[in-house]
Length: 452
Image 1 (cartoon, one colour):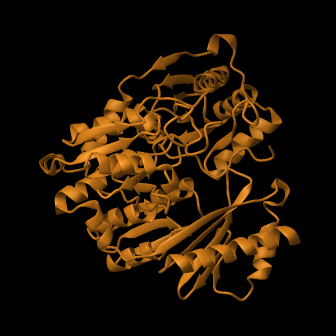
Image 2 (cartoon, one colour):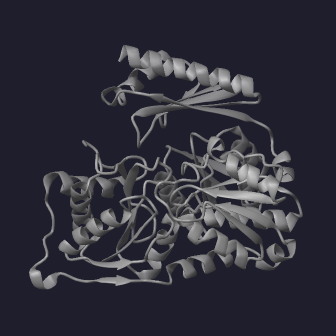
Image 3 (cartoon, one colour):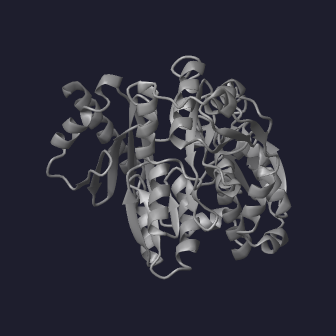
């Protein structure tokens, strides 16, 4: 590994790229940079979670840090509790939406936001140079537990929405917890808000027997069928660490992430004059339309939830979001939060007395196509130069990869921060045109691979 951190933490296949030795040394580096105070830790349901969490705890203790173990929890649950415990940071053992053979480490600052690239580089330097703080034998501290973190987290979300209106709506919701830690929070939250909740894939199991943990349409057919079979009002699905939420309407139709993002953005931005929305270049024209209608300005960023969070905080912006359904609501916390997003969407339905399909029908219609192109690791960085040369003179944004803009759509080509591949996003008013643009982007990436 020349770089440990990708777009969203450190990830690798369990006992292959990500070993106990790697995690132990990484946690010693984290303790060296963030310590010597207290660090809170948690994990999702993945296999090897206890193994890696124990390695994290040992590494942190060795540097003189004390550790607060909050038990299994969503990443936003740990992020919420870190500043409230007054600790110096947090470490989450998770690989988020990656397949079950992966695990990973997310590092959280004292403010609850994942650490900046500058801090990541400090940790990488300590890791690769093996320059670790080593506590004297009589300076090694202890591990404590915090059992009420999920309770505090749920109560905080409830305080951000109108519980009375939600309870009166008496909505039936299917919650697909992806066999992971979202199941510890969202069913409880929605039930306490007055919804009738049916849980799906609710047992914690790192093999993810119900479905792959990425909440994309191809993985949500079970939730779609369950919503229709039970006449539910909607379905909510989380990824592996529940920082995102995907939705299914009452007809079983699976929403794209930018649709749920737009529904929330429309209501939040319209409440503030001159609001600012922070979003990556991967977001499309639907979000541009919503921001324009609300009189809000868009602050574009590179792709990555960490980048959005830090920009939100720096600007004091009203909302952040991503096309994958990640929504950042600063009055609660400026990070992606799947349970908060679920509560907001349900509150909108209850307040306006509209079904989810009606809310979607009110949005401008765009179609998107997303493709992954495998790229040899040694060429992953070099093909950007080829793409820039090939697209010279075209209308484009080069903030993160290459985004080509056309009158009837756009193509974004950018490298994955966590896998050996490039991602190609395309959008247009028609699905056929979106797929045509996506195919063009894939062809450009493959040509760049050949030429680099």
